[in-house]
Image (cartoon, rainbow, N blue to C red):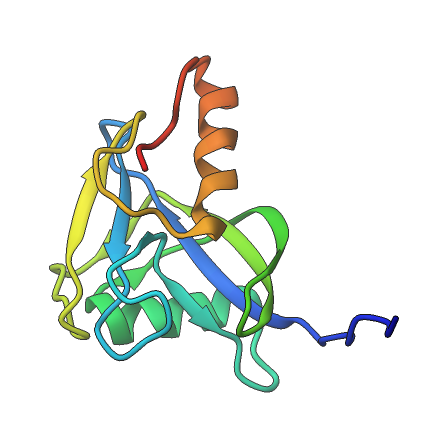
Length: 144
């Protein structure tokens, strides 16, 4: 029996955008990417030398056309996918400037619990559970 291969995690900044009504933004993964069509919180990989907030600001501008004003570090989750091990740095974002543009031909949807879009990316599920805990929500957080 061989030992599992250790994989160095890829650091990813993730924006949990929350509007004034308490809804949160999910976006679909665009065609051509792993898990295309799955719903997730937007963000992307940190580039060399970037902080989580710098990466998140860059990624959300590149993907959604908005400029975040501040990112509140929230939680970190390690996820093992078949293609990669990722360390997800979740940040809550309450304020941004600009109009949303889906620059990667992805879809967007403002959601509440339970989430009405499917399928949900596995790395998104813990966030939905954290929201349920914070908001006193009981029951399934998502379908599928």
